[in-house]
Image 1: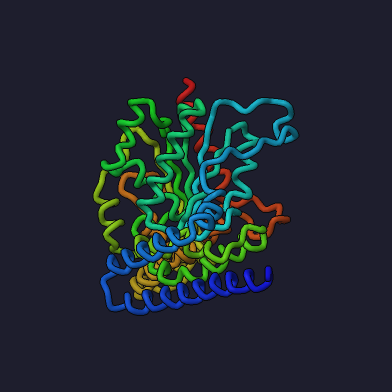
Image 2: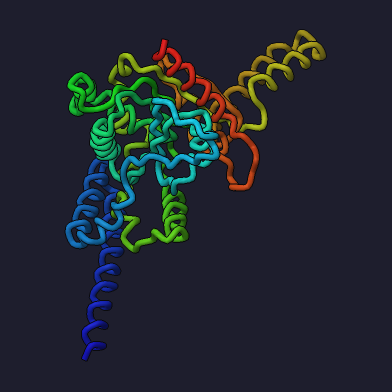
Length: 362
């Protein structure tokens, strides 16, 4: 009797999952003919329908989300308490949580309090920004008055949306002491003007879900409940989201810095050294050709960027900009956990935050 009750339930669950997967594929296939914003709306409606149908599963998937303080290792601090210097780390699209594996421990050793944000990153960026805003309200209730933000990839867009969208009214909330003041925003590999490779986010999604599965957090609905791919549309160059975001002025009073990666085998210094040497060896009649070749090498380097985001896409007028050698991930974290390499963006970020908080204390 008990067996006949369990089997139909399992069959119904898998039947609904199969039908839902088919409907999702049909929605995506049909939406090819629709404008991107229409596709985005369809994806959101599908996600909300799944959340309504499976509220317990949705709550289970959402449980790890939020802003959580990274536990301090007493051995790292040699018995010294962290200073009142708080850094919020915000990951990007389809990140399984390892992007801060090198930066976070380094910040702790430098006596920063580190808060790590986890959020359903495949949903519309605006929804992620609203979620971050609510988490910052909770952070203020924990007696945190000032923070600096370090954001990787899409996390920089989430941060900018919070700080600049007038509907969120972040700065009036600072005045009302509802959220912490943001002293600085460091963006690492952020596609401020979009990335065409967002169209191929399916590979990142597979990596994300596999990492959760191997960590024991796998769920058959996670790939939908953490977002149905709406962020992909926001990340495309020329999207309505990016047009709106980039039309706003930068947040006043926030120090900002951008770090971009260059995956090219040659950098600016290598190109200039090559051209200087070549200029001495080729005849004057060929100098114009050399200048054209130099321009080509620079454009290739800038265009390749970190392999996912071009250097030009990271730039914002009036914002300090640095480039480092590395891919979208390797400039900020090691690919293998056992590696002793220091990712090139890490010391730049730490030094910058030291300067920011040093200015506050003076």
